[in-house]
Image 1 (tube, one colour):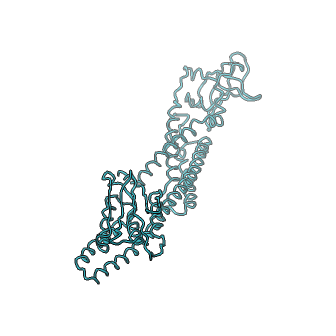
Image 2 (cartoon, helix red, strand yellow):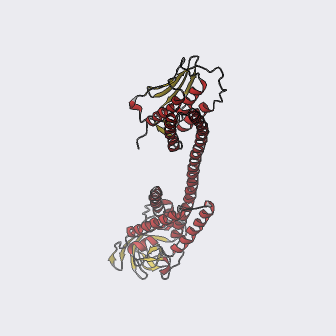
Image 3 (cartoon, helix red, strand yellow):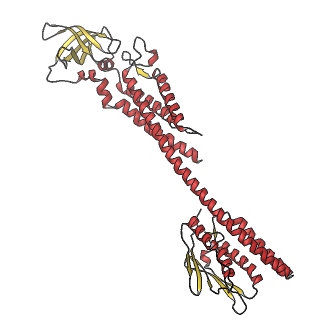
Length: 439
């Protein structure tokens, strides 16, 4: 679905670019100046003087024409020929042999031919424009719009592509060859008849239409350049996505490693506790312990690979996990749990309470004379785990792996830090909860 959306967006963008290209190649003032400079003769030049002439028209194969044997009304001078622009030939649908009455203007350069300014009459009838340049422009616009869109789609096509640079060169060559072939299928208007035809079927005309060749050149160059830009943007986007994917994999791998460090520690402690109950032949306690142990391992299996869990699920696990210690420390170990129910669906990294409870039991003295309490409560949107410090006389050296893992997991998963306060009387850990994102 995501790929289809991207392709749809690419089609729309290519279509918009094709519209711009078609406008540029068909209505560019620069192209008009280059190829229609000869047509400027129809503009009235008041300084040159306007004289009316009669003559017989001869139209060349290139579309422009000359008036032959024209004689000025104002004088008896015979003019060899008067230039008729291709625009006027098209505009009035003039043909060879037509008797033309026209107004002329002086040439732009010395020694040049007079130029027809306006056709007054044709074959004794008042002249009237019969060729509509608008139709020619519309056809050319639509054709180059479709051509540009087709070439852009070829240059931006992506589907399981490897070795992007080689595929880009291949598409560029394909665009050039395709444009060369389509050139001969370009619709053009016959200046004599006003009807449309294609380049290869034009009779008596050269196939090299330099204006159309220039249009094709502009389209091909713009398309190939855009294809290169599109390729670079796509490669940049792929690099960003790949880096994000690698980052996510790295986070998951590091998280799995941290969880893997927790599970063996918890597993061996659980077996030691169970073996103690078996040696004491406390069958009921052993069965209860096995039930609680089964629940805690099930929780680890189901949630150990998840990055987060809800506060309600974590507290349920903490209660079951605490019961395992209560079997060993009957009437000597207590858990004071006070959780705001409105925060039950807030989230935190899974197995956050396990190392804190385990460390509290491991590093403190727990006796009938000195019972031990672990407090788990919420303060605002922060989960607080606290216990009174009662160090053992023969305390095992602390490696700090449990707290280090907890800090690392919080930073990796939530991007936040936990607060650890090792005071003189109390050991406190504050962990900010996160509001669950609505799906």
